[in-house]
Image (cartoon, rainbow, N blue to C red; front, side, top):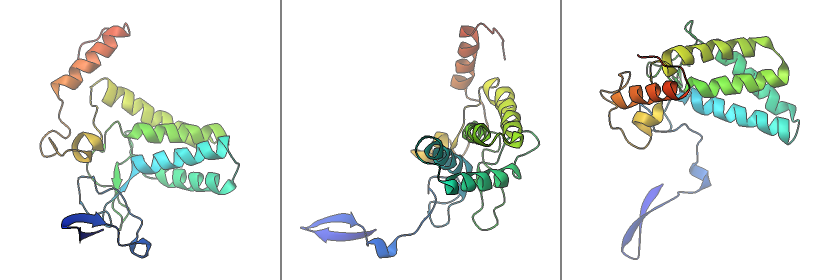
Length: 188
């Protein structure tokens, strides 16, 4: 984009297709520069899951399935022993980054892996998804830790400096209400 003056009014205009680049969201805890932003696992799992839906419902283009399998196999190497996956990967080293290593963001990856299992019947995808699902059940749902990148970095950076990883009363209350309504009266 560039700023141009049109009729005494400054507006943003595209520099054209010759200047495009593929990048990642600039809404993250690391940088505001899309060219240097880390890979976001949630976004990648979302895209791969949509590819599987396309494959399943519209056309059996093997390239879609092959890509999803390749992504899943790489993803499985990143799963932590506690069941979670990292939220971000450094774009140069592909190493996991620190923020939200135990967050509800992993739920999208669970959905993707279960979708892939439904198509391939390869148990490693189901086992990985169930391990992550168990982590979410124990460390997210039961503790009321509803955090993801949107909480702190998407539309607002409120709390990004001091709330990450800390329990907020509104989240604890929400979890208690859910369990009381479901008949599972527990106090945390």
